[in-house]
Length: 108
Image (cartoon, rainbow, N blue to C red; front, side, top):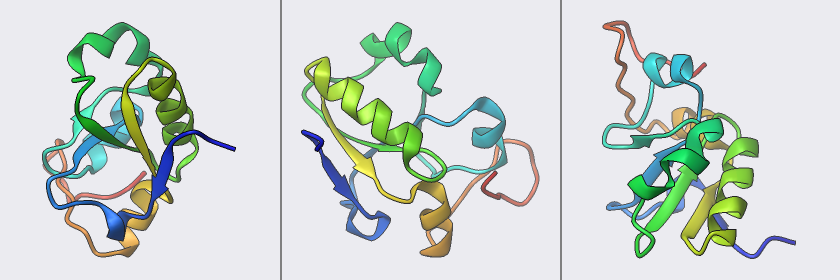
């Protein structure tokens, strides 16, 4: 059992602080506009970039990496919520994507 919340993409607050923990190539292909990108393996070193008083909604492609990231963040004293289904569900829900490569945004 986890000691943090999990929500679906449709339950995200409009002003959610979204933390995307996918790899660089996944982020470049398509991500939520305004999300903060910190790949999972960089999270410990980049922890100071996060506000410990802010609710962080953590997302990856399908929910596995974001689950681990949210679990770890809560252990560090942060408020983290896992986004179930990740960017796959984001895309299925018709939520907007942007890309950094000039191509049509997609989820890899």
